[in-house]
Image (cartoon, rainbow, N blue to C red; front, side, top):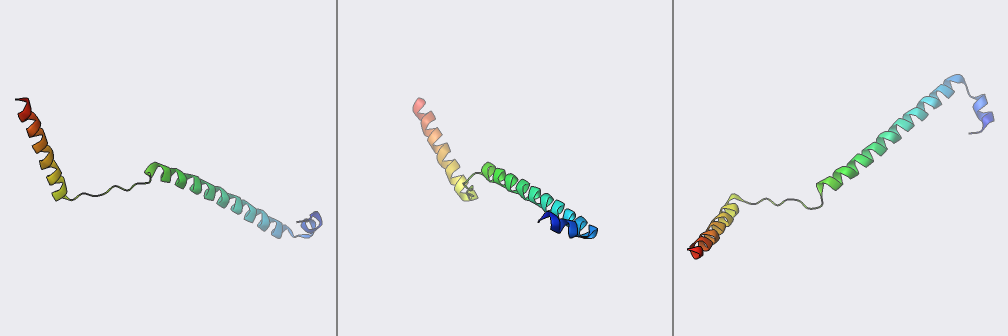
Length: 77
């Protein structure tokens, strides 16, 4: 906006322009803060999702591990 145009504006319009400009600056800073915090969160979470294992699958793995250790202990004796 040119200086001549600013001089011709009323006080009420100038106050409204100043209020809008400060509101825009606040919103921009909030947007930047949100963008930086979300990028940090994504980095912390990592790319892989954890897979859920059923109780039956956990039991099967546990029994297999116990059998392997029993075999190792039997071989030591």
